[in-house]
Image (cartoon, rainbow, N blue to C red):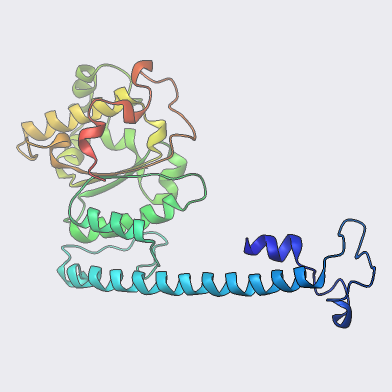
Length: 273
């Protein structure tokens, strides 16, 4: 409403001189804008001031609430309590987070797996970088792996592709074929054993069958080396998954019946938030 009053209905100050701004005078301001009665213009101007005051008051209240949440967060989770700190690419630890983003950070600190989504332009990748910084504070060195479905995004986040991390090549084949392939690579097995947290960006391009196969790999490899928690999916690896399923879809999915990752058998049981 404030924008309507400002941009559509109110008379621009540059259109008429100040002494005639509230004068009807029989004038037509231009070819597309008709004359408004002085009482109408005055009401719009006053309404605009009132709306602006309400918006500013609301912003001040939200800022105050955000400050209280951040204070509580810092009291419960300080850098001095961290196991390991390592700088992340283009991350400012003092960034202002929305209440929803703060809720996600608290969930991540508590060890929960989370799914981050939003439409294009909502700064998912920027928040993901902040989440990576948090993960590297609470987990041991070299146990947080940042992956994406494509190499281009991996360069932005300073990580690697999910296929490279998992050691599955192109990811084609049954889970038995994939485990046989992965076990031939000592580096891939070592990554699976060391992993405490796994970040997956652009999850919308990972199909459901591959996601289930990766869960199988995690369970099999970590069980073999007694490194996982048998009571949890992915053997206790904390998953931070991000993506928008309304954007690019999986290319040549293994099974059209579970084309997307959220259609995998393990999806709903993994994410707490």
